[in-house]
Image (cartoon, rainbow, N blue to C red; front, side, top):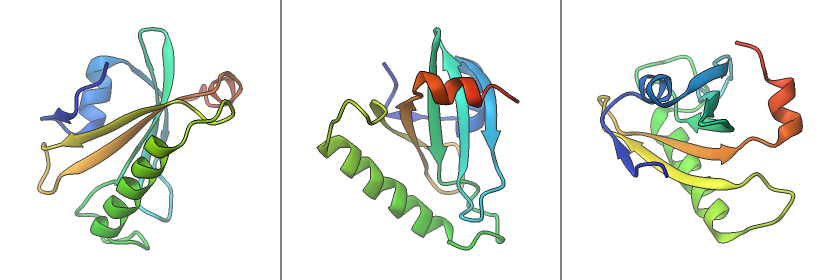
Amino acid sequence: MFPATIDDQPAQYLDQVGTVFARFDTQDSGNLSYGVEIAGQRYFVKTAGDPADPKPISGFERRERVLRNAAALAESISHPLLPEYHGLIESAGSRHHQISQLRLVPRLLARRCSHH
């Protein structure tokens, strides 16, 4: 359903394919996350954030490694209580590659996050 690679920044891609209903951009880690609705389904999308941002506790390369590790873990396990994992998207539209993880947002969380 989702491409393995995109040419745009993650935020631009999400605006093109759906409606962003939440943005989580005040995390100390530097990660940027989004709640996005695409074709009637709500997803949580986590990215490694802005490679040029000097403020986060973790550097961009570390944030990227952590996301890749989480993706590998998500691919290796499945449980009815875990959000459905939809894969990793590489973004070539930046100085560094950015990656995004897509997870289906559980219904209860989707209701609590419906602000933008």
